[in-house]
Length: 402
Image (cartoon, rainbow, N blue to C red; front, side, top):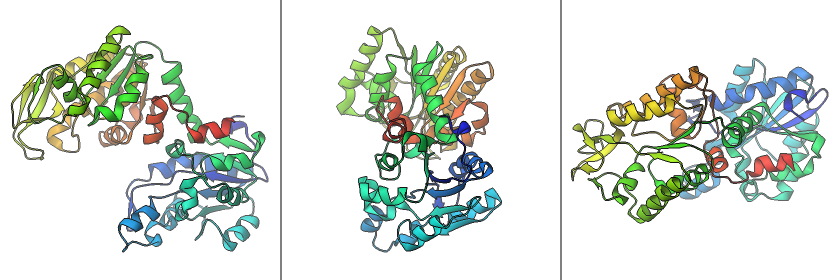
């Protein structure tokens, strides 16, 4: 059943959200993940139900082990509860533990229309271990389980996947956000209108090898940018100077090019780069062909010829997937390539293409250049989206569909 058609009247909904937001000293710097959960929460309350929210934030146990001066309080969701209250315009009761007497009593006495946020589920090692007893205790807080945390869908954790077994098929569902994420991903991977262009960037070929291999059976064009491009150039005998390169992946890069050719998929590498004499915002820069970069210089962004070529391919596409930046866009001197691609994707979308942007850096880029509302869909789940496009089954999705 779709979330829209699910009636939550007189129902306590236990909702797994992803409130793992950028936060320092209790100050939230980006609340987009919290805002993304609002439609699901509001739907349940409007129906006449009540909401028990659970989420993780950071990796408290692992980080405290590395840095003993930290305490669990440094990883509290209390500031999120306060901010959520403001966004919703109603009080969100914060429970300082996700287990224990207080959690049991307050969830049991919860009145319809009320909202509770449990403390960070990762205070307990059982969460990441996917412990059944831990999941069973959490499950006791609700009549219905709603998974709206796509960002953690690739984790078989207690609150994201294991917990679903304690609810029958009529009592578990995706939230609005999870539904949208799955629909957008499925549209690209299984129902893409041709030409389908995948734009893959980032630092390492090894990080994106599985997604590229999976896309060879789906896309007509694969654009490769970012630091990973130089491994392909060196593999083909090019001079890449001091550019980033995985020397142990040269054979892999050549194999990818061969496989693409055999399958009739066009892989597009950047013809030129903006190169720099050091990795710094104030570095000296110039344009160079990517097969002849001098020693002592490194490529930090795609060049004008690459921008023109890539933009033309994007303009003629009907389906676009973008995962990974074209360069070190955090530095103004090397942001032009990523910005130009973002603008090209936005323009293609305006002409009718379906575009999905996924992965932390790509999402950060479209937000930085104020283009998030100019693409079809911006995914909230970096690692989850990547694993989905690698062809892996995501436990958080499979457990709801089981």
